[in-house]
Image 1 (tube, chains in turn purple, green, brown, blue):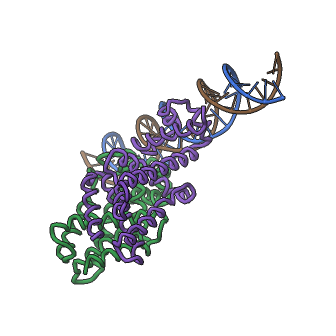
Image 2 (spheres, rainbow over the protein chains, first blue to last red):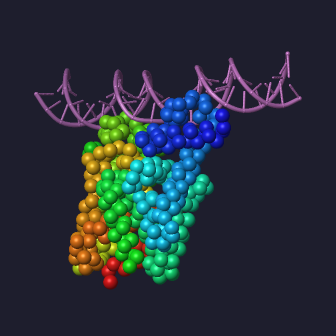
Image 3 (cartoon, each protein chain N blue to C red):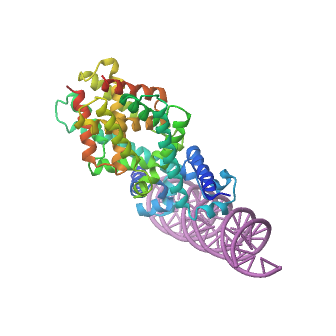
Length: 191
Length: 191
DNA sequence: GTTTTCATGGTACGACTGTACCATCAAGCG
DNA sequence: CGCTTGATGGTACAGTCGTACCATGAAAAC
């Protein structure tokens, strides 16, 4: 069987466990059972647990960026700057099943990433920075703020979205309420 | 020796470990060593590990709210609504040693709280909600926004602050940059 | 056809983990 | 004085963890 396919299957099993029970519940044996393979196979395709965890984070990053892209693309043509910003931020806000899955799984990785310096930087999670620059460009293009302030506004907006996502995951409010808060602030920006 | 004092000592040891190495590194033995007591004593004062973790979270919550209060009080009299908002939000942004300690330790608890439904609600962390209402009142009093929008603005502001805090902890930017983003948005609100 | 390589299974090992159990010592109380 | 109660120490137990080791079958290479 194809190596990459197998690795992905096992990686997805890890992400399912991380989503449902958190990373601390993700032992090698648990992942093997979830993927329907033997413990030895998990060891075979990922020599060590760290390798498995890192691969899982990479898969998750792929899925997240794919979701953002498809969300923007679904806005139809031509996408206005306002639509780009709206589409990007709503893509990473846990409002539907998929985004809830992605954000919650990412949250499961959060403490691990914090406790492991260099995990985010080395393994494909410079993504927030990229997103922020993209947002800044769209904000400036849309005339939502002065060009020299776009970076600041973008940073604030992305941080707000992440913070709202956390509050949704924590049960403080539901996705609709979070979306309302976000759109209120977006509407204030775009005239 | 006083029971409460002992419990607090051990709880603080737990928080130190959570801050430095994350909660997953906080075993009973590790906590005992950090507190300079025997494993048996940790068991004696906290019958189970869950009890210890919950107590640690409670201590952390105390410290966080104490920090917010003292930060507001340090603004001098009379505190303006703008000062209240500014003081509250900068208190929970990791800009100095103490706030970095508090937020990072809280972040260590984050996944545990998410994975344990009812942990936040049952054990003294309805705090975000309280904070949000307080902010909303100050925003309305300060004329920063229409009274019927103050809840939305407060929610957005608190979410932004939390998101900025996450980015600081994740190494995406430093505390000063986060503070700059926050003050920019606050200045836009208060005339 | 033999041999090497790859993929897979099973299992054992040592190091942890949380918790339970037993012993000891001091203090207070009858 | 004797006895109970609270505080502490040490340690054992059962389970789980990541990882290493050995075996086997199948396919491919020579």
